[in-house]
Image (tube, rainbow, N blue to C red; front, side, top):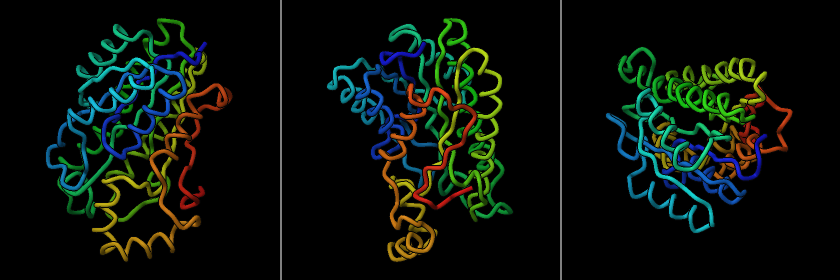
Length: 274
């Protein structure tokens, strides 16, 4: 059974004001030791996609330790199978069997898949799929196989997006990758359910991160355009905080969500309702 002391594995954990960092800290506050994985370097051609540094990764680990929990810094590219397997094995060896997984690493940006589908380079489209979709699968597979071997009834939560449920102009690669995550989540939930492992996803809306601010201002024409977009598109008339998304992920990884699996839960301030 998953207990309050289960080891958590969080990807994309280091970026300042990011969802992954908020998840790692929330899980630590809930009594979990946390393996924090991040690429911790700029993505090739990453343009406006904010990334973490090695110092950011060290800082979140130190903050978790200050809360009285054990923590581990892992630097890896989630799209690289060998790096993922090595990171999950290191986390298991140093912290113990993993029972909770939060797949947060991913995103998109200028030079990283944002633009008209008819003009973005093929390597950018491919990279967005690799980081978001394939990375989620690789981490889920590595952790789930170890859960099964150890007899752990664990929980996995993937980070999708409202862009997985409706096409967003200039975000076609990202939308395709996140839609894939939704179906990946469903299939994993069906395949892992007999072993007592639940798999769910959250679909955030417009979240107040550095990456979102940069992209939103460029796509809407600046701060005034962002304000108009919020008033027009978001029923709650505000963007969300990383901590709000982390709360939803934390719930799906908790005993309170023991009967939930295969869901892609909207956490979008009403922006997406399908």
